[in-house]
Image (cartoon, rainbow, N blue to C red):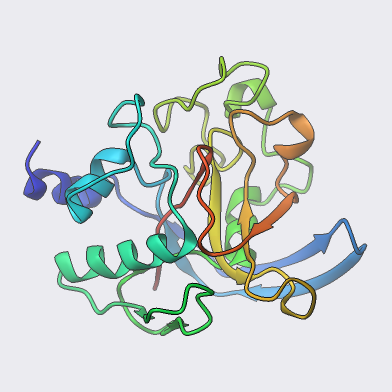
Length: 230
């Protein structure tokens, strides 16, 4: 498939319009809660695939997984660079300033730019829940690839039931990087990822579950999803 056809696919798989609202976030380790306002935005219906990543970057991490599986082994820094490259390829204004600091602390986000970016943590959980308040937006086996049904591998995107806002794989299949620092006073540059993966037990596959790592971290069940500011 050509680069042009892959990029047209970004338009064909239309990003979902997420209405404005608010969300109460909770860190289970510290038992703290905080409320966040969420403006209207757009979110991709599934994580970035290997074929889209290859079309934009000209390369993709080596794997036996198919082209329609979520791209993994991608660091937070690489996800940010991908967002800028895709924005440029689509004639949009990139959201991120970048540099060479491996900690990623040099990266700034222009939230008014019309290009692609990572969702904030508040946007991610708000969109995942889609108006629900429980651990998940549906039955785990119906909505997610997890340890109990994945066979120990990542699966093609959008092959499980979506939530009420048309978003697939928010729970399970792969974890997804978010924009936010996890807790800079304690963990420095570590960034948040959300959603659970295909190797996780049910406890890891919940709307509220938070994980973290350094922005250079790569692993075989961690990818990312695209957002845009309205």
